[in-house]
Image (tube, rainbow, N blue to C red):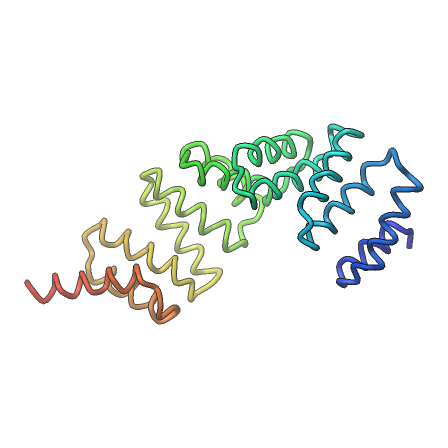
Length: 220
């Protein structure tokens, strides 16, 4: 096993000291190769040293503007710092330079969600779902995005997909309850709000919605 792969293995097993030593050697031996800088950047993210990680990713991009995973790493740093416009630019660069993976499209979509550009988020969320249909978080956020774009029937189907993956997903049940209310099916809405509360007793939105429905039913 070469030095780079040994370093990655050390990082995966949280032996950060050995990983640091080997990544340093990799960079010293190959100072013009962006791969060492990218992996050292990944290690620094694990260690929560974001400023240093940013410098390593930028160095990788200086050496190779097509270094897709460096752009993706930078995007994640900016996203965590809530610099969504800068994160958006980096995720887009990552995709355009060949990172055709669900997480890249998902994170790009989420930058638009946080800026409340729901229509812009939708195609990236859809692509993320196409690439990884079994990811609960991707399916759920796609469902929310559909709902916020007024595509209620499609949102309902997607939230049901979430429950296929995770039967006790309280937020999916809550949102299906909201859809049922939208369709004026109070009994079904109540069922979903109850399921949400069974999964998460502290789900305040579901609790409030359940109380409202029960009061309305009692007044009839």
